[in-house]
Image 1 (tube, rainbow, N blue to C red):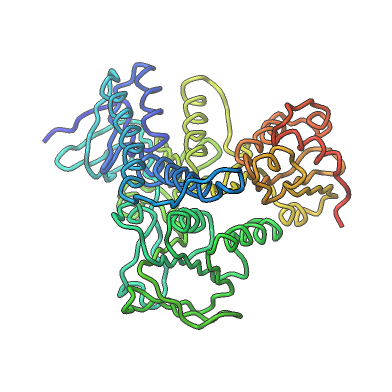
Image 2: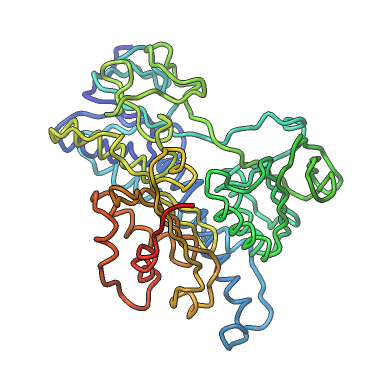
Length: 459
């Protein structure tokens, strides 16, 4: 069978792939887009869209239960889990269908469904089809990592994808992993009515954050009845009459906890192990992430890698920014670089955590003189009015340049309010510029100038 020739081949229909295909076809190129499963990738199908829809449902239930705090009563709150799940499924399906319709109307695009493997630096096999192109773009994403724990292959478990397929509410959900995915699911299912226990090997939750942020998040979750077990050394999994059990050695609490369902939320791995990278000579790191330069090019001329599979960002917005950088450089004559990106992200618990740049601990390791400021959300009028005063704001700046190095807003609206600081950092402006602005009252953002005004030398 003769090969089918294209100007470009895009492997993966996640966040970056379809948008890149749109730019390439718009530039007159003949493009093949290959997707082996569902269009939209992790975000649309098993990540942002369905999980944040569940977060919204769980928040509505939680708020209804707090009716007395706001002067009303709703009576007994009953959760119809099937309808909650159906709503999340519908949101994902709508996004997926919209993407499919957009691609179907894209001139010069051939959409292929199947597993793609490289057979050389310019050849891709998809089933019986052999495709060739001088440009190949890898946007293959990642998946949940199966941890190397005793009993992990004998005990039935869930990951972030299979968790969303549950048709019934767990009676008691056990979660191994106290970071972003695990904590979001913990609060969702607790608010929907399940008992939840989070087990974390490290000394505290989300260990990459500053200690006061970690402790505040733990306090928020425990106040809602979520059991948290940290310092969990020697975690082992066992079958149990209840469903599953976790054996653990902790500083406090019993040495074993059992539950009806087990979620493993201990990180991700790239979908590169069955991509045939060795046939094209594409270099990966020891964890399987494709190595790229500042312009997203691999070591093989004509092959680029975007999104989670390159290890340079595990978020939907960083994957899309990869597309923006690559399209600008290839099609617009620009010279944008990955190293110019200032990383911002959020933890979508309630209240959410908005984060940008360095933590205080990271900034201290740089050895530069620092200014630090922190304020509780109890000082934010908007939070008081909403009855949502949990959390705090924190900012770290360089004492010499007056540039903001990083910030965290754990509190109501924190995932939105953080963007004022994100914008200032990207603009390269010193913090007094933001301090002198006149924000709208009453908002969460209005406390940011006050927060900046309290910056003082780090102790």
